[in-house]
Image 1: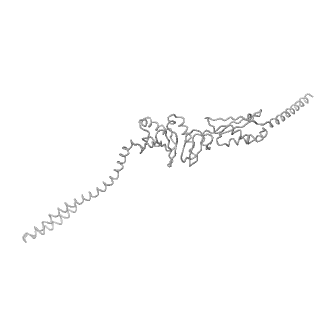
Image 2 (image 1 turned 90 degrees about the horizontal axis):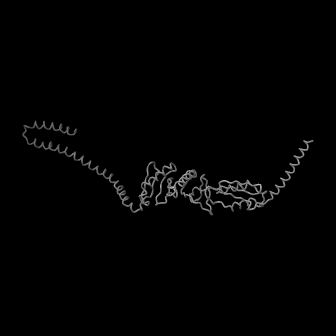
Image 3 (image 1 turned 135 degrees about the horizontal axis):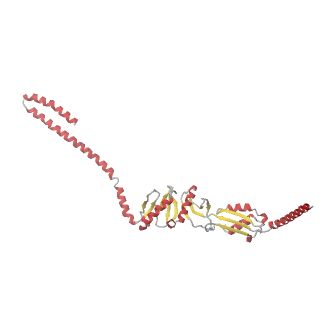
Amino acid sequence: MKNKYRILKIAITVIILGFLLSFSLKKFSGQKITDDNISVNIHEKNQVDFIDQKDIIEIVKQENPSGKVGNLNIPALEKRIKNLPAVDSANVYLNLNGKLNLDIIQRVPVFRLNNAGKDFYVDEKGTEFPISKAYSHPCMLITGNVKQDEYEKLAELVGKIDKDDFSKKYFIGISKDKNDDYNLLTSEGNYKVEIGDLDNIDLKVKGFKTFVEKYLVFQDPEKYKMISVKYQNQIVTTLNPHFKENDSILKVGNQELAKAPVFSAKKTDSKPKIAEAKKETKKPSSTSLKPKTSTKPKAVTKPKETKKTEKKNTATKPKTKAKVKIE
């Protein structure tokens, strides 16, 4: 009998609890979600204001026109908030007291990219999202034909510049030229710092820093048009042609370039000299033969008895001529 009473008590208790729970659920589902019952918590590493609390509340009202808790589709609301371009992640949940909580993390732009007329932000994960008309975030501006697979390396480069006081002071922008070389835009002067690709960034920035501390500090920053650190263990500078103090240096350089064609002229001059030398060598050989021919009239004037000797002399002459040709 005791067991029957226990089972009966448990059954009555369950029925009462079920009745109370169903009553409370009906009351809870019929409760309206007011602005005071909506808690929007926007978290970010840095101060970013792409999303406004009023905009989130407006989205909640659009997803639940009746305003009742029972008609609210929490997964659909969470998905819509996550699809916002400036939202990195979102978590939506209800408390037992009917309070709706929305925890949102915004995207933080690392740099702003202007590519082929399109202007947008890129976060540290390499995700693109559009610019807001209501808020503009201060960050590094990058221009040029930048590929999407380079976003993460660029984000890493910008992060290193922001953390280093020296780099943050000098570099205000990055550009990519037609040769696919990256250039750092500086705040002093009109020169660019050519870094080439995005490899060995620490070494390249360190080389430029050494050049600034040991040399550029004592020079006018307007003197240079470009400072290249893309070559290993080498810094190449290009002078600014519009800087007056560079006129003398550029003139000397132009004069040295103008001397280059003279070398080809010397080669053409050497040819006639060789020809003259050949002619001169021929002259002594011809002169050496003239006296031998001049001996002929002398041999004719001698008496007839000497004819035999003349024949002997004429016979010996061709032998001497053959020797001259061999030499």
